[in-house]
Image (cartoon, rainbow, N blue to C red; front, side):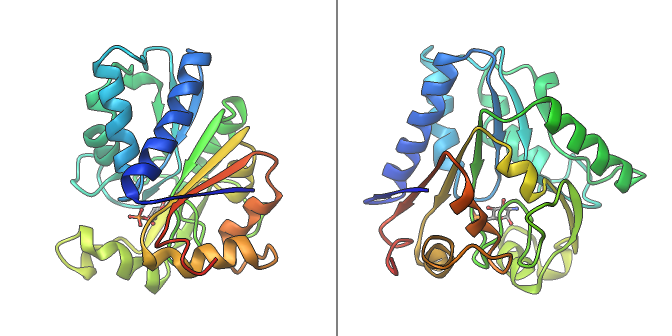
Length: 240
Ligand code: GLP
């Protein structure tokens, strides 16, 4: 695990966008694993600007997203489908047929988990981008999730519901469940880039980097990944 500490959010975002755009230039048919949350928004903004200037193109790119809430319609403001459209897909030349998110409204969620796991096995991520939950979650893999897990349904913890309630009208509207890529699906990526910014992530970063890998901090599994780059700002790095 390589840890890169940047001065601030902007520099963290630029470093991540640099790695992703280099991959897009190298392999025009690359498969990118994308994340939602506030943290990657700056990275997506830079990638969209680069695409607008003609420096990169998403035309042949395939994407697989980490997760989605269960029971939120795709068209809802808070769905991760909406997030990806607003923050990246509508701003670049990607073919939306090549973008994939797990469907949290599938009638048979177990079947949907199997479908998404098979999709990931057939489309290994060249790069998987990750944010970090303040409790150490990656995707929606909450503490205690098996390192061998594939796509599954999760009961969100109180801490995640609280963290994510800022994006909803009130806490009662935050879905209680989500569908997420499993830890094994994330570890299958050729390269992982984890981003974290701000002091609210400092404890999780400490556990992830300094403590032995353990299911109590899902992100700590990345210590075992052969090509993982952690890019964080000074505040997130304050306990290291
Ligand atoms: C959500 C997402 C995660 C994300 C986390 C952190 O729970 N499922 O993928 O990493 O939030 O979000 P933020 O970047 O807004 O702090």
